[in-house]
Amino acid sequence: MLEKYQKKLINLMIFLDLPKMKKSLPQDYRKLVKIQNRRIRALMKAAYRLPFYKERFDKAGVKPSDIRCAEDLAKLPLLNKDELRAWMKELAKDPKYDEWYHDTTSGSSGEPLMLLMSPREKAYLMANWFRVLLVAGYDPFRGKTMSRKSAHSVTGGKDTILQRIGILRRYFLDQYAPETEMIRQVNECQPDFLYMNKTELMRMCMYADKNNIKVWQPKLFCPTGEKIDEAARTVFFKVLGPNMIDSYGTAEAGACMVKLPGMDAHKIWHDSFVVNIHDDDGNLATEGKLACTPLFKKDLPLINYVVGDKVVSEFRDGERFITGVQGRLNDAFKYETGEVTTFFEIAPIIAHCSDVIQIRFIQEDYHNVTVQAVFNEKESSRTVEEVEADLRAQLEAKFKHPFNITFEWKDNLPPDDNGKLRMIVSKVK
Image 1 (cartoon, rainbow, N blue to C red):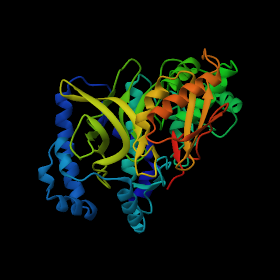
Image 2 (image 1 turned 120 degrees about the horizontal axis):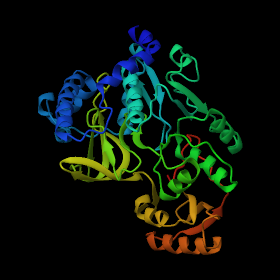
Image 3 (image 1 turned 135 degrees about the horizontal axis):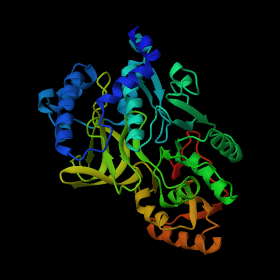
Image 4 (image 1 turned 30 degrees about the horizontal axis):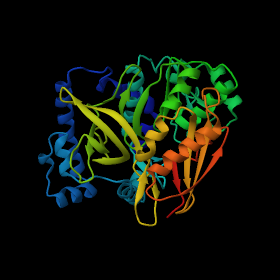
């Protein structure tokens, strides 16, 4: 019953949560570690009270008191999406959670995941996002934000008292509309901050660039949900300006790190998250699969949650920075032998090909791959035939076994139903 009233007070709860967060990029990592360690210990005690986590602790032979810092979390097993999905489905049957938020992920890495979230955790997650804006120099309370339409938006437009007096104004851009209509909506709203899925934003910017249409340049913008490649970055800067925020996170855990204009790496929000990296053997490493633990989620924790991305990091004066996000771990070309060629293996080909703005690979079966691509006709000094021949040769050199490669050149690549653009779509089971 309490959650029912908390949902009505979600904006007030956001205001109360923001003061608990660091709203600048602190230089003293040692102070952050003390805050992080204190919150880790509190989270472990809360998690151990839940049957799901008590079983995981006990099987690992670990007690909450054994985990006192970020590195100690490696003593617990990683939590994958399938395990989380099964747990959430089971809990959703309990009427206790009827008034909680039942959010659903986009399903970019497979079956969409229903996630239960208490109103107080939802408020903190949203406050954490506003913190990203504050650090970037934007006032989310007085400015105007514009984002894609979402089934999970808590409020929108001017439908609250706070929004009527000019605070927390949030507007929505129809990501399904024709490009001309999307541009009209942005130019009419003139948002201070614009954010939406990278592929959807890319579609609008490509159209504007190709047709020399001027688009309102916000103070800040943020393409979300997908890795930003250099070709996309170039188009975004040309159309929307240079003030791009690169915020990394998930719908399940929230925004756990940020890369602001001028920064060469992502900085982790250590006061609210633990980000560890594990190699293929499960050991802590500087390169491998990212595991995220949001420290504010004590009602239904996510401990060592495997996001699904492979990342590269380095330590600077003891603090970990994420220097590269290499993309989804499940993107791969499959062979009858059981071998695979991952997206990471062909990523350098795409990264160094400025002749292509967008690209997607569809593996039809074990013998045929279709390459859908958008030619950068305004910038390329080569013909389509020359670019195709070059890409074909480089791909054939990377594939472990030969494919029949067919190219389909398009004006733009529409996003998948979830609003994102999967780089590799394999139809092989």
